[in-house]
Image 1 (cartoon, each protein chain N blue to C red):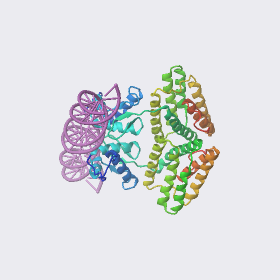
Image 2 (cartoon, each protein chain N blue to C red):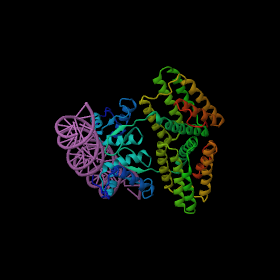
Image 3 (tube, rainbow over the protein chains, first blue to last red):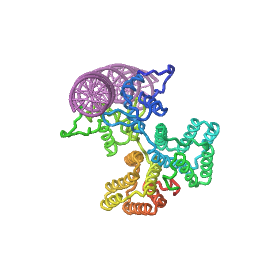
Image 4 (cartoon, protein in one colour):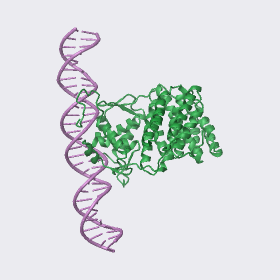
Length: 225
Length: 225
DNA sequence: GTTTTGAATTCTGTCGACAGTCCTCAGTCT
DNA sequence: AGACTGAGGACTGTCGACAGAATTCAAAAC
């Protein structure tokens, strides 16, 4: 234990390990755009910059590789994954599969969905600010997935959002910046509320998928449900 | 570089790293049932048994944790994950989401699906042998996912099958052992062929989901598509 | 001017070591 | 007898070191 734990008081809960810390930091660097896709990542450099040794950094990089944010071949450095627009259709399909399953599960169980309203609110509040709009958009969709109460779905969906953020960082593509964010999500929300009330998820599923596919600019990659 | 590489000839292609080797071996031990769920895994012991040092073993364990086969808390050993029957519904939902998306994608693209026939064949050949039947069953479904041509889907589906195998190892649950494996899969196969011909995946999706849910013993966790 | 070559440097993969924490288990107290 | 306590050993988290492969860069050849 060498790194600076700035909490001198009672830090009972072990501030997780250096591996988790390194993972968070490197992931942050990538997703904040401070390191561009294709950049080479040398574990020794990263370890130096973070003031820790290479072992935890290596484990963190291995995890990032597993979740698709970095790539590597044997005896060769890690590189930040380069996700072109060509990867968007697959990501869109996976996202549809996950979110639609979340919607179905919520409806099947009759889960209350009011917690989504605050994100509609937020979308309205930040209307016009693309940055904040995208964040609220993402939060809305993550919240739906969370409501399904499926921990493994949560996990893989969050990996998916990371990869989508990475696609946007290539710069050749950008979606969802329309000014219709509020309206579009309001439709989804009301459809979900209806579906929970009636117990029939079909219309909500249809709308949800249409929303995702058009939002990501690939409306034609799937037959309508 | 200390471990025995038993290939003395021209091993040009680096036989991957010790991390991958450790990952494969430990995963094998778990899924073959040689280590029961809940068992404590000490990296030092594993490293000793494999004749390598702890570093690669630790990275491998970290990866296994990420894919859900082992669990751990800080400063505490890894343990083989204990997946009860209570985890089956979530796994079934995730499996439905993935396989149904694979079917839709195949139909949308008109991908040829003849490669599935050989697994129907195999199912007929091994009829009566539960072991081999389960293997052919799994192979059939993996092949469908592979046919969708989505690398990320492949990856996460294979993680899913690992977890399903782990559930079976608790011993409290067992599915799919009916003698109807051949018939059931033949129906799926023919429906998929039809769907590809007509371009309408709906009936195939319905049947597929029904097959998965009943096969895993949770027929009622989703409204029929 | 461009390409090739080869040595120096850098980086990765793996190892052994050390400090701190957790677990074990025998001994003690109620 | 059962619960508590406290050494003692065992295991994890992290580090620095070393060998081998990859990258770099400058000099030489075309």
